[in-house]
Image 1 (cartoon, helix red, strand yellow):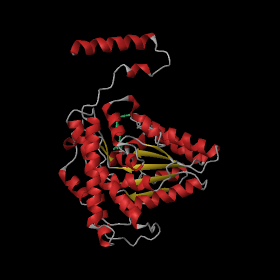
Image 2: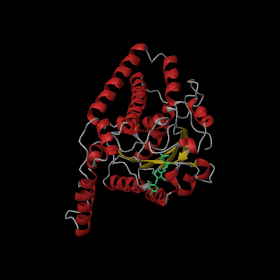
Image 3: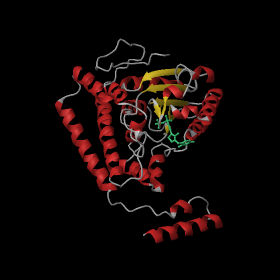
Length: 352
Ligand SMILES: Cc1ncc(C[n+]2csc(CCOP(=O)(O)OP(=O)(O)O)c2C)c(N)n1
């Protein structure tokens, strides 16, 4: 369990691992590559937009693209996804418009609506609460006799929350079709993985819950795809949940509000840069003759277009009305909330 499943080594060469090998067609291999490149480029654009004051905050997924895209790509579009908040790669695979993701980080309340239309729950800032939602939705699918599953995307930090323990235990007891996909990106804000759990790995905990636990190289897109595909098959067959630990690294600070130089050094970043998920996959695809100059040019052109579209949608978009914060809490606003709304409006008017 300790050694992560790896199909492509950091130098881009195929490993001897045979249990999880899948023969994906070239179109799928290229589609995965396209998603990797576009996710990284749009991620950088989100950071820029935040720096330019267009977004309130942003949590970069740089370094975690393979973990996210590999896992999301092998699922059916009717399988419900329950993201934490860093899952841009998952959103893009689900064809959620980047502008809608931006609306969330800009603070527009309706930002989550486009997510649910794609069978993806809105992001969950209260850490690990969504893991229980994922189990509940999986139990609903089970009772309705559907062969769909749900996936809870969570971080290493989230695995220390009571909610995630309850979720995993309940899922195992109920044999719920739910996959717990932990992106162990080595940090929970400034708390290192070494201070997060005493078990040898996060995957080891699965034994205690009574479900299979698998460690996968989260920077190897094909391994993430294969491991999730196997867990999904198991869930669809009625055999219950799986805990997957994708070992990866958060290359950027926790969010745009964080300064990671205060708690981690350049050597660590350099070490993980050498395991970059995109460069290894590029090398692999080139070596097997799938990545041609033409494909690369097309992918780059699409990426440039999507970046421009994102900027056009976000820059100068109207600010959300703060009143909406209060409008949608209850069907009828309470006197207390009404007073708070009036107070906030008065303060904003005074500052204007
Ligand atoms: C219940 C709760 N406690 C604390 C926080 C503050 N907080 C936001 S992100 C975070 C760390 C999350 O770490 P992890 O689950 O590893 O995910 P990552 O940010 O690394 O993707 C914390 C403690 C929160 N949002 N919700």
